[in-house]
Every structure is written in structure tokens, then in C-alpha cells.
Image (cartoon, rainbow, N blue to C red; front, side, top):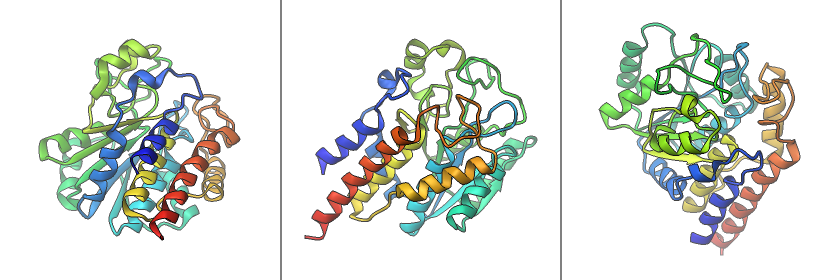
Length: 293
């Protein structure tokens, strides 16, 4: 199993878009995140939605969030999606597409601190996960990868993670660029390795940080790792994710790099994107065959 887990980690960290993420990878955090989720309590919060300034949401993040939520649901755990105004309709579209009946909470623009405290008190999550979710830089502003400030109407989900730290709730950050929640764990590396890093680097750390070539791949990697650890299939099929991405685009999601409504992720062609997804599934299927012997 050790070789298979290491192989999963190598696959998800392939830098097919040339971002230079190798210096950001914390080897071992993917497996630690998977183990932590398997040992989690009943409820896990997940937030996603890369905000593009015309109020669109990127194609990277939502399908990974759905993959994680589905895996947790199969494990008998409760996933709660926490979204803001721009991302809520896209995530609802994703839930409708896969037929996943789980709660989604709208995080407000005002009164965030009080809302976050009450939300945690109500659901008592053991974990909070951010996948491709922009967090504040050192100056307190939120930036895209080009160093452009993002409009203020996004929900500041970092407040949830600050609350989590104060309440002993485990946190997982997933990203691929340096401006996402979780990257505070490797702030100095982001500043050194990523273009505009000194501007965009997020200051919010998480207990576990899973960096990958595409953020969705990190989510799939965690699902694949949990599959190996439980001898259960918890990974998404290509045809299911392809249909999901198509519906997300139909509902308004765009490629964050090209800004186009097309079934691509961070400008990566579908065949290159799904090559990674399918290789992860191949590792899981091979392992499951051994489990049955």
C-alpha cells in the first residue's frame, strides 16, 4: 500500500500547467489528511468556489468538493457545503447533477464572525476543508493569481478557519497556486516560488495542506487514499465527472485561466485533466482486487 499511496501523491503533483508547484508540496500531508478524515466525527464542512471578478466561479474546485462530499457520504459521515453568494448556484447545480442530498449553507457578507461561531456551534464539525478557496494576503486583501484584488462580495471563509483553530477543529487546505486558504502553512515558499507570490500569498494555514497540479486532483487524491485505507471505492468515475463539469459550465462556471465557458480546468485540455483522474482510479481498482483475494 505504501507504494500505491506514494504513487498517488506523485500523480496529483504533476505540474502539467507549469506553475512551479513542486516547491509547495508537503509530502505526506495527503495521507495524513485522508487518515484524519477517516477518523473524523460525524460532520465535515467543505467550502469551495474560486471567484472570478465578473461573479463567475472557476471549474476547478466544485467537482473536487463534490467528490469529497460523496466519499464522506459513502463512509456514513455528514458533509455540509458552506458557500457564498457567487458560488452557491454553481454548487447547487453540482449537487443536482449528481443527486447528492446534503446541506448547503449560505455564508453571509456581513455579520460573518457571529455567523461562523453559530454555524460551528450548530453543526459541531470535526473538520473544515477548503478547496481552491481564496484567502487573505498579508495586507488583508484577496487576490487572484495575477495580483489583482478580488471584489469584496465574496464570503470571507477564512473566518471559519480562524474559529476552527480556536476550537480545536481539524482543517485541510487544498490548492494549486498560493492564494488559497491553507497556503499560510508554507507562506515563505509561496513568496519565493510563485509569480506575484509576495502579493497574493495567503496567510491562513491549515493543519494539513494538499498541493497539486490542479486543485481537483488533490481532492481526488485524498479520495483515492481513503479508498486504499478502507478497501472501498470512494473515487469518481471519468464519465460522472465529465458530466458534472459539463453541467457546471452550463450553469455558469468558467475556466479560471481562459475565462471561457468550456469544459477545461485551468486551461488544461480535458484529455490531460482526465488522464490523472483515470490513473488514480486505476491504482484504486488494482488495490481493491487485492483486497478481494
